[in-house]
Figure 1: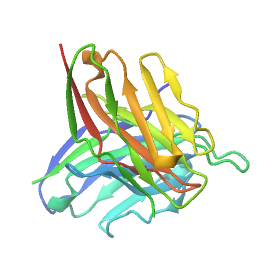
Figure 2: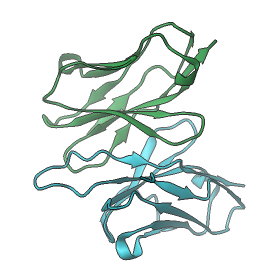
Figure 3: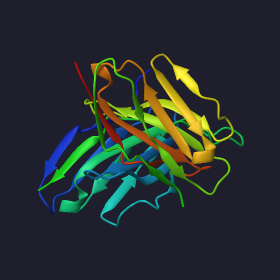
Figure 4: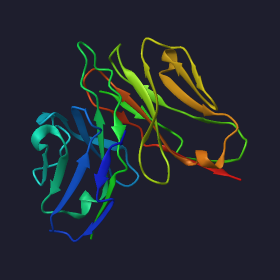
Length: 118
Length: 113
């Protein structure tokens, strides 16, 4: 079974440009998460989709970030316009649907997209 | 609020040495889950283990073992007879209920031949 995949693996852009990151979750996983790790810091939560709906977007830093998950399959994260502080590694993770009364999901992560804003 | 502290930023050992990675967490919930992930040089985060707050039994998987102690809010990870392939960044994480993962800053483990 294929794991979580992310594209591109690296992206180098200039400040003010737009970048779109893509995540393909494990097949059948309703839950999709975006996280970000800025150099030397913790991996921080950005948002959580359940199928195509945004369950929690409390971690999105500002309105320059837009996440979508049309059709409940893959997701995109767009940064427009990119700023220097957006540089970091963006991770996507997915997990199985929550069972009845259960939230013991294990999140499986992709390899991340390393974004560098110059 | 929940928090995970991995006080060791980097650890260097020589192959075959045992090494313990520390993880201390803070949470007000009585039900929570703890995780360890490994990030090898290739970049992906590899799931290693999940424990719930009601199961304090230590776990062993091959050369890996985990020591969960609620009394000290710790979930430490020991690698026995370390190998070069164990070189990676290791992250400890905490999850409460339906919330998302809270990660520590990670510990970089360097195992030299």
